[in-house]
Length: 299
Image (cartoon, rainbow, N blue to C red; front, side, top):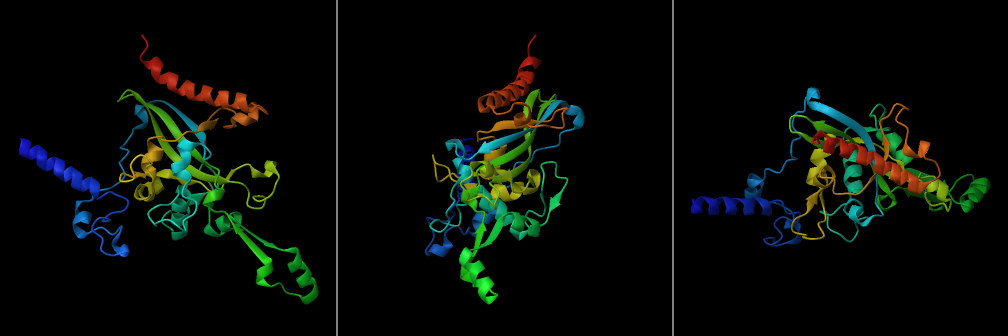
């Protein structure tokens, strides 16, 4: 029995070692071998996103759709934001926006949407127009008026980058599973939010309110977010996948909208010009969902 436990423990350690972000770093003879797994490691790997499992509609005793804003200024949300500068860091470290945007450009995420209801699909050309600004300097206009053309050096192109992302908008469904007798959360959509590219460098704070660039249907992106690892500040040998962070709700956000009879209006639409009361209303929505589970066990 002890020999069997020892073998299982050893196998577990080998499997965990195969999940490191910098695989093979201790065995690499040249820098190019860092991160390249051996054939033995690939055979041992069974690293797939944890399946949600089937939930029948009849098993949902209660449900409530909510929208949350995850502000990236908060320290607990830093793993979703950093690194924003990839020039001096390895290819295994990327921010959540880098991962999503790269997958959209490569087609690994085949569909992105303009709204959180996934009713209006956006093309890649439309995305580029909303995430890119091309402007001409005053000297370029003078040159055009005089000579009829503009040198490329007088044309400025501004793209939205990872450091411009201010928040993530998360759509999910809270539901009470009557078979297991517990409240659960299923993440359905996520969208990076940044200021309008046309006003992103202006001094007008009113124009810097983050707006969603696009929405991704989360189950469609789980495989990609599972492969991408976020930095673990407590143990760099055990990075955490973005899928794990988001599904386990290892972030802090506030609810800015819930489904309601008023056309799913946002909190700011009925609690106006009072940030404190808006936060309290967000907390009230959260408490209402949590209290439903607590009330199920009151006799």
